[in-house]
Amino acid sequence: MTRIRTGKGTAIGSEIGSQRSGICLRNSDFRILTSLSFLLVFALALLSSGCGGGRDVVRVTGQLVKDGKPYGAKLDGAQPETFAVDFVGTVKDANVIFPATINADGSFRVGGSDGRGIPRGHYRITVLHSGFVGAGGDRLQSRYSAEETPLVVDLNENAKLTIDLGAGNVTK
Image (cartoon, rainbow, N blue to C red; front, side):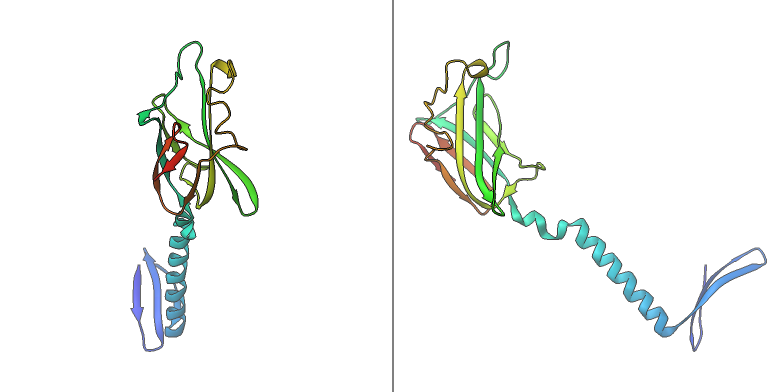
């Protein structure tokens, strides 16, 4: 590629064998082209960052405990227990439920719809623990159902929560 600067502009072109091809740009055209290139790169960088959308979600992890000890369930084998933790809230005037991924030892993570977190906001936390496919009913006697749960939390930043099922509270 050949770039030739003249008094009236810049010529950009290439030479292949004995053939020459190229365009001639006036200085003002060259500045406009440079400015447009910069704006295009800036716009692409902004779009790839999600336009700041990552700041609107929080990552939530935590541990279920009962009377200070980890509270877990049997989640494998022929008859795994039913164990669920859900974060229930309102986002943009719509009721939402974000289920947690829970481990047998009671540790959990709330990934949200895309795995990157859940929207900032006020949430009620529901917990269900029953036998295989619900056998035996809720071992927590519906104390943490959507209608009854005393577990509430405001999430404005990433948080590691401790949910005490004996005391009926949640701490950050």
